[in-house]
Structure formats: structure tokens, C-alpha cells
Image (cartoon, rainbow, N blue to C red):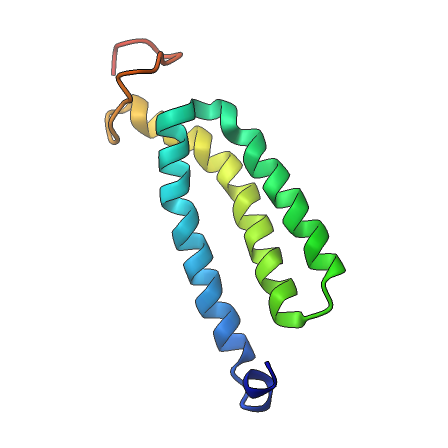
Length: 107
């Protein structure tokens, strides 16, 4: 951690990790909607609240920043899970044949 701070690389490291966290949440939202539908939105809420609380509690700046990024990426995923359902309805993403959808069979 001192290496990152001493060489002014902390912002760059946080930026790279932010990119990775956001990139990780994209397929998670797609898979969650495919298998569980929109009813899993509260998982993202709980994860966001836990990460937000830990972000305030942790003393390390790098870890605190990553927890904050994870928290707000999780909050954003709540919106995205409903948007993903709309994308499935439009036919842009595949439907799970083992699930019933609230919008019926029409695309």
C-alpha cells in the first residue's frame, strides 16, 4: 500500500479495480435475471448496504474506496436487473425456458 501511495499510483489502482468491479457486475446481473428474474434485486441492496457500511468502518483508503465502488455498483445493479428484464422482453437476450415471465410469450 505504501508503494502505491509513495509512487502516486493509488488513484490508478483504484481506477483499475473500479473498472474490474463494474465489469464483474455486468455478467452477474445478466445471470441473476436469467435464473432468478427481478426478484433477486434485494440481494444487490443487501450487498450494497453491507459494502457501504464496511467502507465507512475500514480504515484503509484503498480498501474503503473499493468497498464504496462495490456498494454503488451493487445499487446500480438494482436498476440494471429491471432493465435486463426489458432487454429480455425485447429479445436482445435469451429467455430461460424453465421460468415464467410476467410479460408472457410475446416479444
